[in-house]
Length: 463
Image 1 (tube, rainbow, N blue to C red):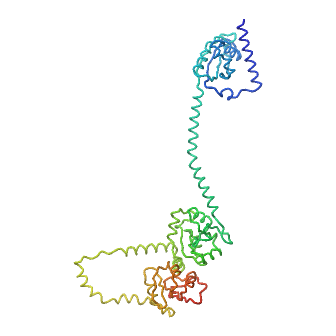
Image 2: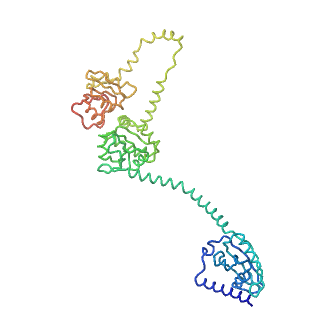
Image 3: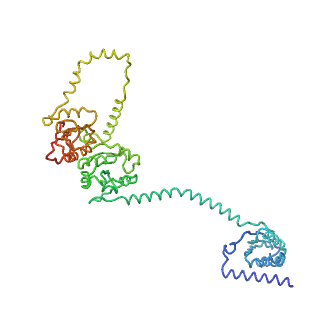
C-alpha cells in the first residue's frame, strides 16, 4: 500500500511539473542541455495502454533507493545534474511503444550506471514493460565535431577573403593619399601635383587621371591641360620653367602636342607608347617614355617642316644612334707585312681629292646677312650631331656643345658674343640668349618668334 502511494505521489508531482511548464512555456535548450555531458537514449515497450506521466512515474518510482542517495534521480534533478527526462509515446494494437531521453552532467561511469538502472524497470502503470538502452551519446564529442567542421568553413572563407580585402584596403588608402596630394593650380584650377608651385621643371599632361597616375608612381610635378585649348596658366608657366610635354600615344595626344608647341615654350617632348594613354602606363613605361624625351626644337622641325610624327623622330634617332655606335667600333689593323704595299699604292690615289670638294662646294648657299659667319655655318651643317658653336668677339670658338645643352651652358658663361647652330630659333631660346649678353644668334630658321630684343641680331641661313 505504501509502495502504491509513493508511485502515485511521483506521478502527480510529474503531472504538476508538466502543467507548470505548459503554462510558463517550454524550457529552452540552454536550460535543458547547458551543462549536459552525456545523453542516454532508450526505448520501451508496454503490454497495455499507458501515457507519458506513467512512464516518468515508473522511472522515478522504481529507481528510488536503488542506487543510494548519491544517484537518486530526484536529488540529481534538484541539483541540476540530471536534466528534464523526455518521453515520447505511441500506441499500436493495444500496446504502447516509445523513447526515453535522459540528459546527464554526471561523469561517464555514473551515467552508465544510471542507464543500466533504467533497464531494471519492468512495469509502467498497470502494464508490464521492458526498457532497453540504445546508446549513450557524448555531447562534448558532438560539439567538438561541429566545432572542427565549422572552423574549417570559417578558415576557408578567411583564406579566400583575406588577401583581396587587404589589397583593396591598401589601394583605397593610396588612392585617398593621392587625391589629398592633388592640388588645383592657377585661375583655371588645373589638377596638379604638390611640387608644381615651386619645381624648376614641370610635366604637362592631358587630364586629371594622368596626374593621378604619375602621383601614384612618385612623380609630383605634373599639371594637366584639361582640354584641347591650352590654358593661360600653362603658357605662363612655360616661360618660367623647364617644360616637358607628356601626351597620349593616340590622335588626340598628337593634336594637343601640336597646339602646345605653337602657343607655349616647350623644352622637351615625351609621348606614351603608340596606342596607349598616360593614365594606364606602368611605372616602367612612364620612366622609359620620359627618358626618351626629345628636344622641342627637333620635334618642331620634323613635325611642322617635314610632315613627320613624333614616333618617326624617335625611330630616326634610334637608327642614327645605332649607326654611330657601329662606326665607333674599332676597325681591324692590317697585318704589318701588308703595310708597305698599301703605302706604295697610296700616292697614286692621294692626288685627286677633287671629287670631295665638288660635293662640298655646291651645298653652301650663304645669305648676305650671314657672310661673316659662313665658316661656322658650314661647320655646324656638316657635323654628324646637332652641335652649337659659342664664339667670342674675335670670332674664335670658345666651345662646341650639343644643342640640348645650349641653354644651360649659356647661363653659365658671360663671354659669349655669338651662337651658331643648325637648328630652330624659338622664343624661349631668344629670351635665354638675351639675358646672357649674346649679340648674334645664328640658326637654320625661326619658329613662333613674337618678340626680339633690340641688342640681339638674329640670322637665319635656311628656308
